Image: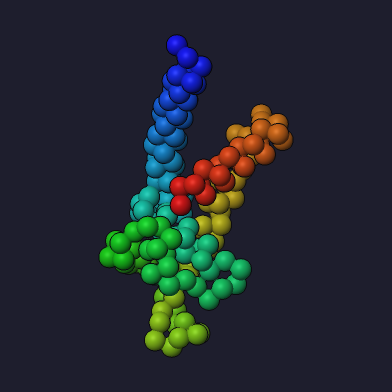
Length: 157
């Protein structure tokens, strides 16, 4: 067997191992999204968690809110799917529609006071759990993980 063939086989096995680990991570992520959603509101589903997270991100820093079309684009979802989820979040009292100060015809989405309070509490708990999980990692490992996850996310876009 030549060196090139061995390297190719080794790379194929490494990629297969990575794919398997990412699949496990994605499965855990879906389950975690549902748990996090239920921390915000017991009737919220995992899709609602993705929506409320994107709405919070889009209106962070004191912004007036975010357009539903921007939420759909950021999440790679169909507008009708996002619309149904937004209606659910509105009915749960977690988000509201407000006028766009830059365009009187448009409506923006933002978290209600209750939605923001619940989302912030969930995020604080999630961050505490991550810190506890990663306390066994040294700074170099944490830096490597952050760098490699950033690279992977950049390559996936």
